Image (cartoon, rainbow, N blue to C red; front, side):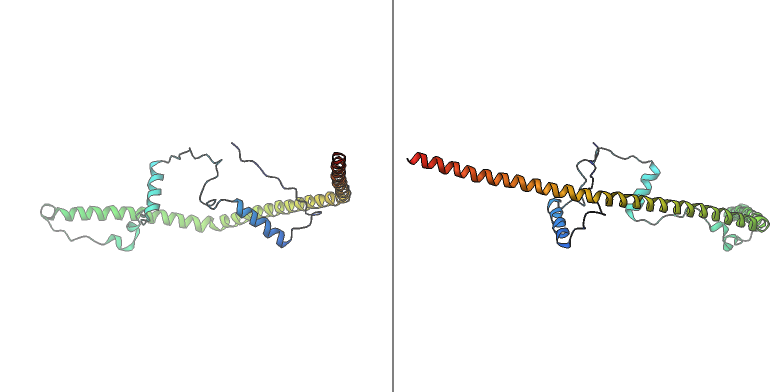
Length: 219
């Protein structure tokens, strides 16, 4: 079921703004009709039968946020640190047989060295590209941003102009209809006054009829 829309008949160019006393009275009436739990209770028209479903990764992230546990680092950067390539223990001719953990240390160090070498090689390549093409790329990016900013400024100015034209058009129409509305309101007041006068005269006549009937009944 769609939520019903509300319309406002307020005409700012004709209607006078409400006074502070009237505004306070209206707000008090709204507060009196509004339930005390409106901020914590859903509107009756809101469908509560829907149950959202998320992927396991999203569920795990939700649980992590609810438990306030510190987030784990996504990428291990220790292999790129300067102290990550500390030399392992020194080997000797029979170390492979007697101390196999030395061989594992050297393998791990070699693996880290390969990773560091690949990282540094890619970094040098990127720095060379940045030195060669970075300036032009930066200037082109600035030119694109300036063009985009200019287009947005133009669109904003056009939107403001349309809003001002619409506001002026509404003001002119409201002021043009103001005189007619004043005449209609005065006619409505006279009509209401006439109805009240007729009702008063009817009550007076009714009283006279009842009084006359009472006099006839007493004779």
